[in-house]
Length: 457
Image: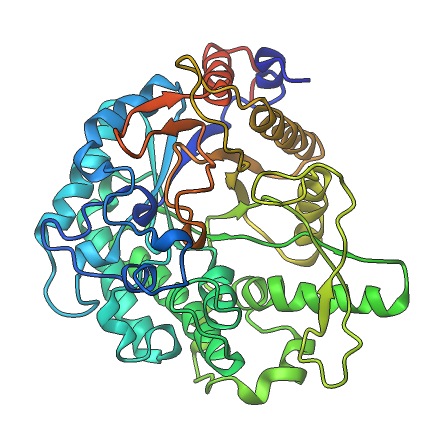
């Protein structure tokens, strides 16, 4: 059922409907006002890394079109905006001098949201590590965690009084495994030992960041955004079921375990613990400080089978075929029930705080025709996943909000600008924004919700 008024009525009165973006994907202005390069600037300029050698130099030119884009968000009627802060704008070399002009930009952004009655959900790290830190090992080096702590303290000291919520990291799975083991994201490493170092030091940075936020603004709602994987075995066979359990530990447990239980999964440590960096006294206590909320980014299920190859490295899995026939334009299986399965399993395995769906959306590349974009499949995708979220609330799970990914088409990392996730179309030649059919529907949903067509909380 895609009637926005009926769907709005399935959510409690304190639910948050928002839209989300990330700094590197939309801001552009890569060399303006003191910003220095990130690892993504370098990665984008290496042949063969990003589709078409696309880069973030201009992106959606959001840095120069801030007021226009804030008006756009307001026009959609949503109550919250999730954005990330670019470390290379704040402390351009990762350590060293603070760049006041960078902080000024986010001052204007947060003040602009407040003036429009929109809640500010900030993410401190969405993958754009200052390039200078890469020379010292980047996330494979322990000192990067302490550089991050200082950066977090700097941002919260300046902006924390006006933020409604803050996340330390966005999707560490990507900045750890996708970036250091699979080589698909910056810095493009394909090395398990590097990835294991990045894993622990990213987790440590999260904990140090939480401590920094709490020291500056004890009442600020602090969380972590994880792209937890809904993992399904390729068959009912014992080998595939065991493979799925290993995959869960490797893709989810190495983040959820340290943060919510204070330890890494046993199966993971048995297989790879000897190759981990030294876990120093106090590390796990730092990592496992209580959180006020956590964010889930969900797009598609992960299906795995046992890898029978001799000596296959943990988790020793291979991809299993999709079950659903529908795919988005990026090739991802559309299977909304997996979102519900994932929330149920994670809450069964861990003592979790309240949850926001911090990203959910679909890649469909329809263009503008006669001034409009008919992206009905994206509308259907969002409506279906919101339906699952409403089901979870009815079952008693503490789902507090939903952020559509993304506010606008943008730089889609290794895919460049060829893949579009926005509910607003961007013409990259002219920077013209056109609200798509999905965006108009989402605005109608937010409007119906705000007008009180929902039950009391």
